Structures are given as structure tokens and as C-alpha cells.
Image (cartoon, rainbow, N blue to C red):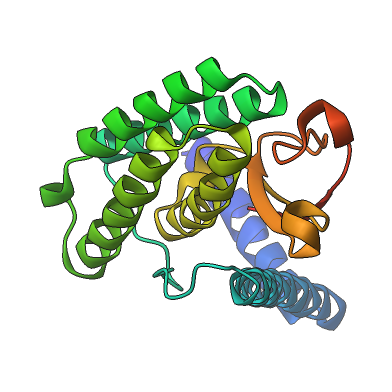
Length: 229
């Protein structure tokens, strides 16, 4: 009996303390202030994401306006690919990067081998796995890759191959932007203002270190990073 009375007294005391805390204006003000801060942080985080998305959109629009190959589709909202497509597109990107390395080194044979590999990787991407805008975009990109890679494969000199490579780089930029490859690879868009008699040309790289594929060892460091993808 005594234990029951003691328990009731303790419960009553706790309830009264909780009521007093709820009636405490200072305590209430602290809760409101904390909630406002949390809400403000969430709103600020959302605003930052929207701002960054707008900056990214402006960057790729400004780059694309300078492309020599017009009309390449680039999706404003990137298409979410499944694991199989992601793997195929990463393999395509890796083949492209091998072309970059071969051109940087002025390696004609290595360039031809890398071009052949990239043709295989384009054909390995299952277009039936895409749908709607994603399918339309990839079908166009794949067709452009096939045309330019075939022309690059059949050209004889490094100078000719570099010309076709500039078009392939523009297509690859649009592929990376359209299919969320930036979520799987850290890539940068680099620009050489001296390429092709001052017309300029872009390419993609994995680091911010400039190694120019359009001039190779002659002007290895010519260029600048224009965008982190």
C-alpha cells in the first residue's frame, strides 16, 4: 500500500513538472526558435540545390552553344539508368578516355585500337532498355558516335583523327549530362582555345590536370577546365 502511494506521488510530481515546463514561456520560446532554425536550414538547403541546378544548366547551355556540332540532344533532367545500362555507359566512357590518352601521347596505333574499342562499346549499349526521351536521346547519340568513330577509324593521320575526336567529345559531353554518368565518374570538360587554327575544341578528362589531346606533347598544357560535370 505504501509503495502504491509513493508511486502515485512521484507520478503526480512528474506530471506537474511537465505542465510547468510547458507553461514556461522561455522554454516555449526555445522550442519555437529551434523549429524555425531547422525549417530555415531545410529551406536554405533546398534553395542551394535549386541554385546549383540552375548554374549547372547555364554552364552546359553555354558550352553547348560553342559546339561545332549542333543539334545534339541533351536532357535538362538526366535520365535515370539501371545498373546494366550504367555499366555499359561507363565502359563507353572508359573507351573514350583511352582515345584521349592515345592522342595525348601522339600514338596513332593506340588511337586506332581505342577507337575500335569505343565502337564495340557503343554497340554493346542495349537501346531497348531505354524508354521515352531516354531512348530518343540515346538512339541519336549512338548514331552520331557510329558515324564519327567510323570516319575517325578510316582517317589516316593524327590531325584528321583529332578533328573527328572533337565531335565525339561533344557527343560524349551530352551523353554524360543526359544519363547521370556524373554520379558514377568524376569528370571535367576541358577546352583548348588554340585547336583548329583558333576555333577551339573541348574534351573530357578525369582530373583537372591539363593534358591536351589536340596538340599532344607540342602544347601539352594548353587549355583550361571549363566545367565540372
